[in-house]
Image (cartoon, rainbow, N blue to C red):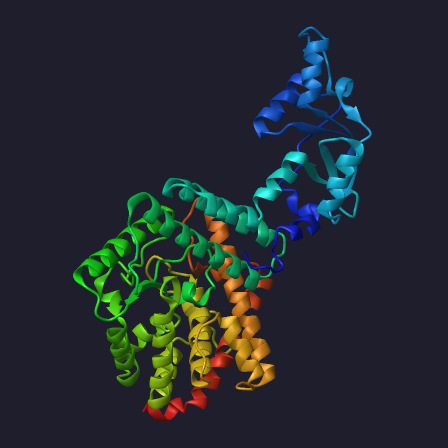
Length: 485
């Protein structure tokens, strides 16, 4: 696993408050023990905090109830929680670190701590079980589970838990760039483990002289949760019928397995299972050259989808040769850049002169805005185009923007605005997807601006204006007003 701000060791330095979810379950000291037991069952917890006049007095636990039953020969109906609770609570502050909570539990040989905020208000309770579950939410733990999986079904169950880990990491304050890098790394790990299992269990493998490529956001390594599959196959020239059959079998089966663990198929069928996205190196060179030298709308769309290709499995040398051909062809065809820039400029951010955010007027998403189409697409494509003009391909949008900053391609003051705008839009998109999944809805790119607080709406406006800044820059840089006529 790549090291970064989101690693297993860093979890020990999270604030305790990030582990507290929901309102703490409490009861008055005069509560009957039977009622306390009912509360524990109803909330699926092992202890209830006893509170009087807003002040915690102690805690009654499953262990206390068990001891009462044994010592009282089963006579529990006449007892109140104040009779059996453990007084003298050991507590931590919400801003204390997890490592401090572990130390206090060990020092006092206890299994739970009450958590207070800076005003002295009870915020929650954390248990040793919460800390154990914390370990299973670390990327390293999940990565090890993926590598140890022995079936597609097992990977399916692990995949379902990835959303929980990402949600927890987001609540813990992990920055958006690290989050999407983590999601992409784990998605790569799932794909590579599926490939291994297909070989081990079914004898299905990619023959020598071929490579499986991922495209789009997965190719850039900047996915938010599970985006659609976008993939392709490249293979050496001169393969025989047997190898072609192996490639087809591998491609179809891999797409099926990815769908089974929760990665949707591409609605446009841009996947390795489609023969139109499986070609020899020579054929791919011809297609890329056609997309670059004949800048028709369909060719520009195909190029935009394909340009961020990245090898996940197989012969990486094929990718390197194709990438070199792409760079050489764009250097020869200078007209490609303004036509591609004009294609990108067709998607201006939906914000008016006075800050009004334009939304869909009809259809399923009436009253909503598509965050991808509204700004994320324009930034990713514009950054790729400018980096390509500067002689570079590959990497995330953040990587490309940083390169453009270092090379002085764009003004420093504009770069800061553009990068912040892109990060905010990606973060907002991920937040909305996580909230949808939390209530049992499919993740979406759409957002109703009127359904978010005014502060967030203002931030969205500023982010869209940052996208507009980038589009103005490429319009001037490639003289788009001249070629638009």
